[in-house]
Length: 104
Image (cartoon, rainbow, N blue to C red; front, side, top):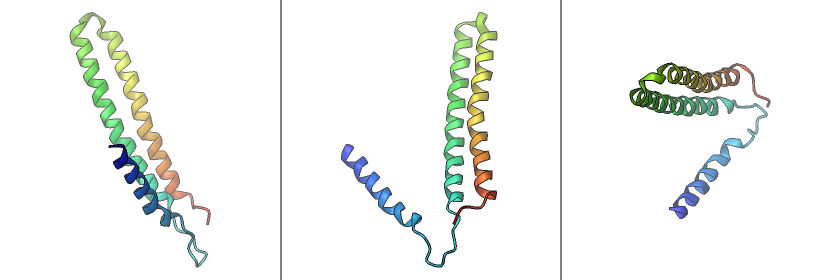
């Protein structure tokens, strides 16, 4: 397993190296945009997984202790807000990468 991960890491690094090459004509390419889209996709996917885990845990906690529903609901909403803020921050970074010209 370790050998496989090392091979995959080296392969990704070798495949990614031409991306950072400078163009010969002096014109810059916008490389921030694909990375920003990838970041928003990963952040949104992980936020969805996190929100599902939080909601499942809160539902289980409310089922085990119905008397503490108010406190659990408050912690649920606070957790969901903090998780959702990560997706919104990633979206803001994508907009910045889209509309701010790159140096080059």
